[in-house]
Length: 477
Ligand code: GLU
Image (tube, rainbow, N blue to C red; front, side, top):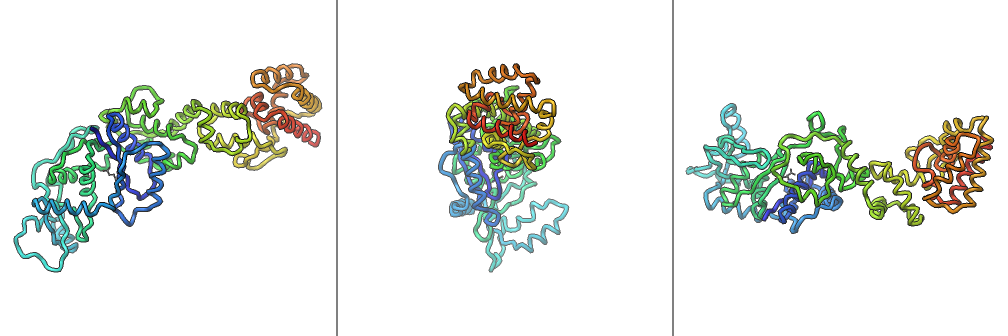
C-alpha cells in the first residue's frame, strides 16, 4: 500500500510549487489505491498564522484534492517526539549535550576551515563531570565515517559523506523538537511509503535517514522534484505571473485548468495537453517526473483555462460564475449568453464583466473608464464613423423600421441572424454599416457577441428600448 503526504508549513500562502507537490503526491496515492495525508508543520510558532492555515485548507477545497484523515498538526505532538528522543537516549543513539551557545560559537570559530561537523561532539562519549546548571539539549549520534545515500525516484542515487553531517540537535534544551527529527518521526508513524517533495529538501534527507535508522523504521522512497522556474530558468516571481493558488481562483482560473497546468509542468506525457484528474491518476508514475527544472509559461495556463471554459457544462459554469443578474433570465437566454461568451474569454473575471456589460444597457454618451464600469458607454468614434451626414437620416430610419420588424416577429436564435441579414440587404446603405449601428445601440461598442444572440438574450422590449435610445441620441447629435 502506498501512503503519501503533503506537509505544508502554515507560514504563508500556498503557492503553485506547493500545489504541484501536493498534486503529484495525491496522484501517486490514488493511482495505487493508497492514502494521501495532509500534515501541518506548524512548529515555528513565530511564523505560523491561522490565516495561512485557513488559506491552505481553502485552496485544497477549491482545487478538490481530497486528503485522507486524520490530518496531523505537529504542534500537538510534542509529547510523542519527546518519547522518541528518550528512546534514542536509552538506546544510546542520542546523548545529552551541555554545550552552551557561546561555547559552540567559540568552537566553530576555532575550527574554521576544518570540518566543523566535529565541533558539536564534545559530549558524545563524554566521561568527565557533567556541567551543573545547564539544561542540556539532545543530539543524535551521526556516523563518523562512510557514506549516507539513497535512491531518489526522480534524481537517481544521491550520496552524502558522513563527515558532512554533525550530531544534530533533535530536542532543544527547552524540550521542543527540531525540524528534521519531527518530519522523520511523523512520516514513519503515519506509514508514509513515498515522499514526494521539493528538491530544496534534499539536504534534509540524510538527517532524516539517520533518525529512521536509529529508530529502526522502514525507509520510505524519496522523489525530490525540481523547482518551478520562469522561462529564463530563474526563480519564479510575481513579475512572471506567479501568484498564490487562491489568487488564481480570484483571477478567474478554474481549478481543473490549474491542476492540469501543474501536472504537465514537470511531468512528461507526450503531446496530450488536456487531462482530467482521473486521466492524471491513470497515467501517473512518479519516476517519470522530470528531473530538470520546469520553465513556467503562464500563457499556457490561460490557454488551458479557455479550453476548460469552452468545454464546461453551462449549469456548472453558472454556479461558478455566481452572477446574480443571470437569475432574471430565462433558461434559454442564459444558455445563449454562456455559449456566446464561452468561446471568447480565457478566464472567468472577464466573463462576469462581459455578462454585466451585455445585461446593463450602454450609456448613450462617451464614457471614461469603460473597462472597469459595469455599463459600457457609446463608442463615440464608432458613432461618428457610422452616422456621417450622408448616412445619418437613412440609418435613423432603418433602425426605426427594424424596431417595427422586431415587433412583428418572434425572436428565435435559429432564424434571427438570417432576418437581420435579409433586412440589412434591403437597405440603400451597406449592410455592414447598419449592423454596426445596431451593435452600437445594443452594446455601445464594436465587437462582442453575435447580434442575433444579443437580441435573444436581451429580449424584444429591452432590444427595442436600446435601439430607440440610439435613434434619439442620433437626433440630438
Ligand atoms: N514543511 C515543508 C515545507 O513546507 C515540507 C517538508 C517535507 O515535505 O518534508 O517545505
